[in-house]
Image 1: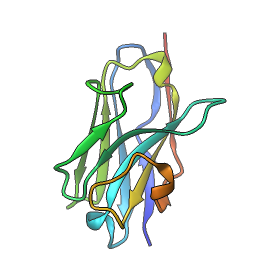
Image 2: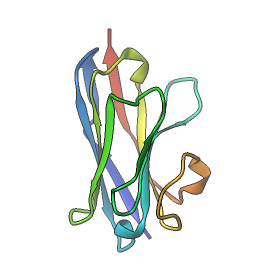
Image 3: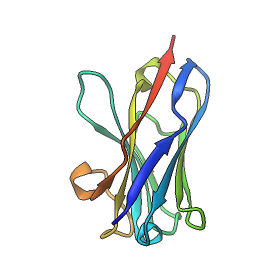
Image 4: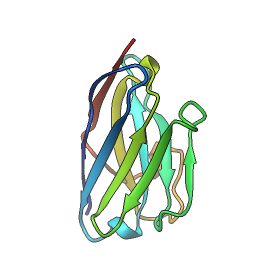
Length: 125
């Protein structure tokens, strides 16, 4: 079992930065690929970024590439999402997710077994 708790969301202005954290409890964190997804009001949940078990391989949605950075600290059982140059269209609930069966990670939410409760990010113009 793996429990995930996101934090770090908030209300910011366009151009600002935020760092989201996702703290995991459970013995499978370091062997799990991790992902960040988001869901804006009235829209489906979408992929944002993923990171491999060892943190070496990352992949981003085109909409955040060059602005967001995913990282992890397996010693702290935590995955991060550094978000820079935020835009109003980044407003959403952000979720972290774990995929214990895939070392690299996936862009498909159905591949993830464990999810956090989400943290709200609101970017004003």
